[in-house]
Length: 378
Image: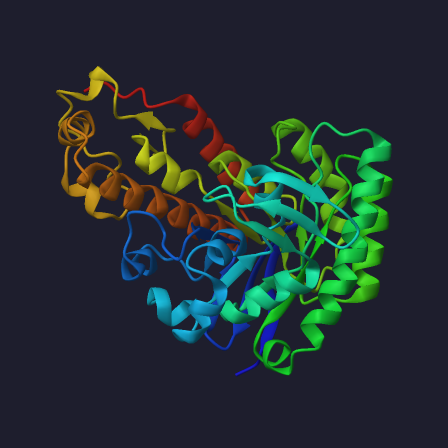
C-alpha cells in the first residue's frame, strides 16, 4: 500500500470529498480527528473511538515527550501499540503547547527552551527534536515545527513569526528526510502562518510549496480572532494551498465552524471540544449544545439525540443529569462517546452532501436547526 496519497472524488463549490490512503488505512475527508493528547482519547476506549466512525486520531508531542517520554514509547513498540490503536495517528509538533503551557519559555532561532508545566524540568524543543520525537512515536502524519502566531498580532509581529516558522519548516523537512525509516512510512505536513494578513499568508504558502509537503495545514486561527475573522481569512488563505494536497485547519472546532470551513475547502480538523465538553456535561445535538447540569433536565425522559448513534441514546436526559450531579464517572464516559459520535455523524453528513451536490442546502438547514437551540417541549 502507498505511503500517502490523496484523491478528490467529488467537489461542491470549494468543498471536496476525498480519501487519504496510508499504510494503516484510509481516511475519509472531510475528516474530524478526536484528540488523544496523552495516548488516550479521554474517557474512551480506542475501539469505542473507532466505532464512532473515526478514521484517525491526534496525539500530542509536547505531552508525550514529557510523560511517559518518546523514547520509552518507542521501546514499548510505538504509540499505536502502546495505546492499542491500529489506525493512522497524526501528531502535532508540540509548538503550540510549548507557547501556551510551558513555564519560563525562551524563543530563539534554534528553537524553544522551556520548563515543563508538570515538574519544572528543563527541555529544548527544536525542529529537529520535534521530528525525532514524532519518529519515536511512530506517527503516520508528522507536523513540522512552527510558532503559532498569537492573536492579536501586529503586521510586523506576524511577519517575524511567519518567517521564523518558514525557516523551521525547512529544517523540519530536512530532519524528516534524513530518517529513511520516517520518510518511508510517514507523511509530513507543513503549516501556513501569517495571522489575518493576506500577503503574509501568500508568502507562507509559496515558501511551503517550494519546500514541498504531503499536506498543508492552516495554523494561527481559532486563537481568539472569532468566527467571522476566521472565515474571512480562510476565504483567501485556503485556496493558496496546493489543490492536490489535503488541507488541515488546526484546532477547529465548534460544529458550525467545521461546516463553514468545509465550505471553504478544508479537509481535516481536530479539536478537544467534544471530549472536553463531555467532561463538563455539555452535549452536542442536532439542535445545538445542551448543558446537562441544568435543572430543566432532571425530569426529561428523552435521550440526548436519537439521531446520534451512541450508547447514550439508551439513557434519558434525566438519568444523565443525575449522573452529572452525583459526579459519577459514567457521565463523562457517556457524554464524551455521544459527542464524538455526533462529530463523526456530522462529518458523514457533510461528505454525503458533497457527494450529492447539495452542500449549501445542507449547511443552511443544519445551521438554522443547530443555532435554533434545543427548544422542543417535553
